Image (cartoon, rainbow, N blue to C red; front, side, top):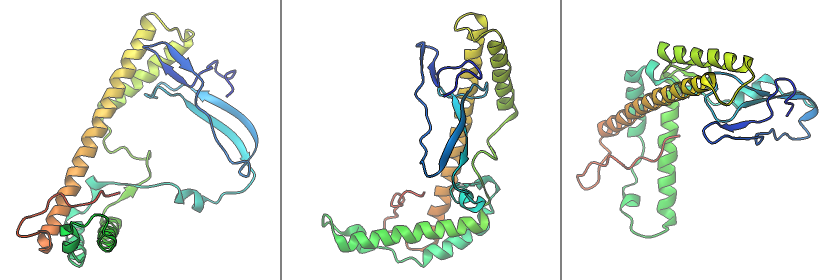
Length: 238
């Protein structure tokens, strides 16, 4: 890392314990990276992590197409903008066509290979239908481009962190005093607010999805063993 550009010689910091160290780095294949131009440690006021962002500018040895780069970026489903009615209807019909592995669920043999294959097929079919229905009726966006849980209050807290960080930097980044104390307070308030907003959003979307899947399976008439409804037999959805 090159600390000379902004005077920062650490990438990890714990202000409460007074710990600072240079532990973050880039690992690149020599086949991809040619001569490095420069590395830089970034100190941005809206960064709520204990690790500072690091940037590396270099000229690649090989040209990477935009299509290949896009394949490496996973999309996030926007459930708040989904057409849940159509999604549930299509998913209900699709899940109804899956053969329910009743014998596999009742099997008591440890390590049963035949039933293991059946359960894996059941899981694969279910996840496949979930993904297919989502592609049709649930919009998506690339991570970082849209924070639909963002609020004006978070924007104000973010700006406060940026402003106090600029002031703190302008006076030499002191580790004590009123300016530094205010910087830490602003960062803590902003970090807690962001974590709470993300947690609330993830909880809401997860509950919505679980409810939708349960209803579609109940509507298909294939969710049950010996008259008992199974509400916890679903594998994790990725």
